[in-house]
Image (tube, rainbow, N blue to C red; front, side):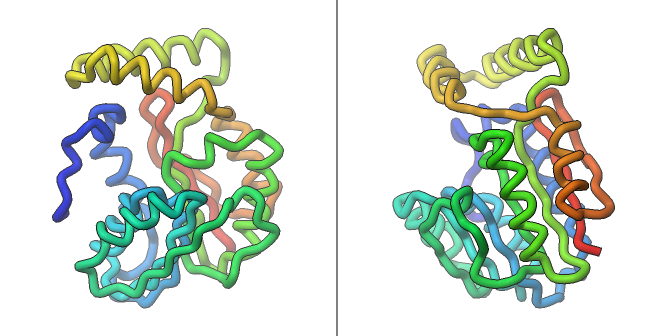
Length: 217
């Protein structure tokens, strides 16, 4: 990719390469297909850029609550031939989306929602997938038990320190993480099934980082 990913963003995700690689690899469509894509909590457009690189004919809408982040995303994807749309809104409050999609993706965003908000969102996502469409979520999940969650956190701290993250940067990240509302992977798998998704599966897991999906048909 044109933009370097070797900064703090990558250091804070020790499994960065495999985490995002799997999220993109499990998209089931032919690379030439003209798919319609929605990126929820798109931020600065990292995952949208990855999709654009793999699917040059994709039409991609990026949705985020921050107009500042979407402005950065616009710059990130400027050189791609894809058609992009930028939607400033709080997707967790949306009763519906503007249209239906072949692919709805999200990365490191939905864990900011409460359990009830996640369940509501999964139903909304399912309602706006075309037949044969897929939802892929690359996110952080809560450990299934307290001791497991403690191991997740300790291993993450060990790994990011090994990546060279300074104490000040680590403390800032830990402070931000106090706002997280992570849910167990097993719970989210069940919520997807209850929302109507089929073929629900976890494709990748590295401590708290997981990639899981569900399809509409």
